[in-house]
Length: 215
Image (cartoon, rainbow, N blue to C red; front, top):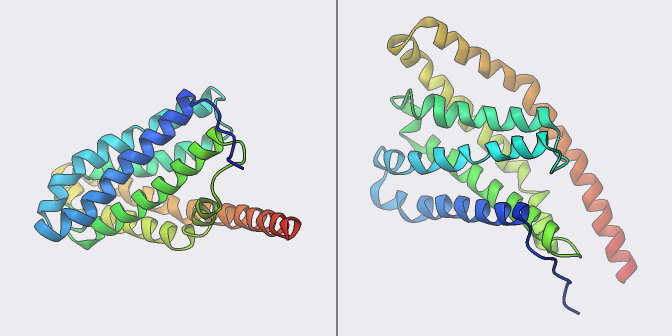
């Protein structure tokens, strides 16, 4: 029996388009990087990455307006940390050396795979009565084991590589502001990671119970 599909709402369409845009970035990583390497790949891709990531500001608005149930503080923190890298570093401090090597590729890969899965999960959750396909649920609540540390490590390495450049190009105040932003990851990452671990336990338990009922 086919799953019942609901009409596509603006929110569902936003999630589908977002998944497609991040899919485009992942496609670039797979097809363009092997051809041009670094630093050419950074200069060809960072503009797309910045624009697509800025689109996540819509998620803050959705949280403020109550369109989604995502906590506002968590949403703001996640979006702000990425904008610090995409706008703060890639736009104003593009000389940061870790933006021009494999660290940029690991960042792009971690972000794009995470977002493709996340947005598709939300899309199916909004449009299919039975919820997202099981494979998508498994990806959503298991890939984070690897992708979250990979993304955060890449972010920190890129910010770190910009510290001396920020001081030379602007001022020591900018350097210490970036250093302070790195310290925020110390409480922030464990909090987000532990939240996903708790959510995973709930979801995996639900899947096991559903499997027992069908057996």
